[in-house]
Amino acid sequence: MDVIKQTDWAALLRDATAGDAFAQSYVGTIYAEGALGPDGAMLVRRSRITAKKWLLKSAEQSCPSGQLALSNLLSDVDCNDSDFPAAITWAKRALAQGEASAAHNLACIYRDMRKPSSAFRYFKRAVEMGSDDDLLDCALCYLTGYGVAQNFVLAAECLERVRACNSERVTRATHESALYWSAVINLLELAGSKRSVTNARQLLERANVDDDHAQANELLCLIGKTPQAAQKKKPARQAGRAGGTS
Image 1 (cartoon, one colour):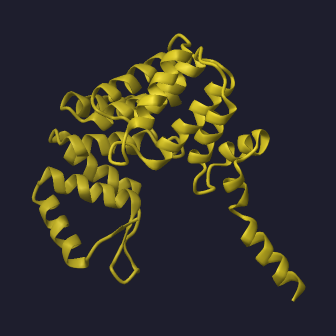
Image 2 (cartoon, rainbow, N blue to C red; image 1 turned 180 degrees about the vertical axis):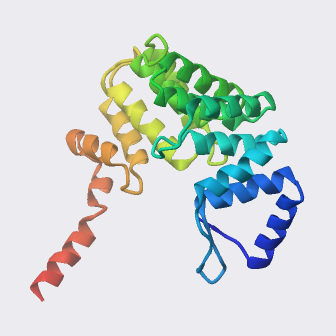
């Protein structure tokens, strides 16, 4: 939830009311999520109806950010007023103006609509437009044959590209997932390379470096952690036992 000053919110509303398309997009986005004041008190209460009104004003002025935000709002599967056809229309308009995130949004919409080939096509389009995070989605499509012919080698190549990206190109979650799935492919010898438990272990431990990747941890428990990784939690467990006997 955003934090915004009352004076900034008033100025933003003033600009939006005057017809500024970007301000309308920002106002709509804030209404979609709600916002707090600097003191932590609720400043703008969430309202999908009001959000939709402002985003539609922005989108109709051909503002890409407004079109994309409106598409996101309308494609929310957890809401009763979701509208996939309209969401697709607005995302495609944003995409036509070069909004790379719109390709990802279209992929997710088609995935939710159970249209795998269309989903894969737009995940790939997002990658072509510079979204390295979508390489992970492409890798999983190749790995599972979702919307494209199953190809373990291409899946491994996509994952390797994700792993080569720095933190400015992909999120930490995407990077850790790429490490995990690379280890799975290695252990199952899916991409033609020889299985190496040692290499897989290293990948899994990097994926689980903060002890927050449950699937990687499960595989590590199965194949065995390195001594250093196995020792990580011992001090905490010892402290807990000491506390229980005091």
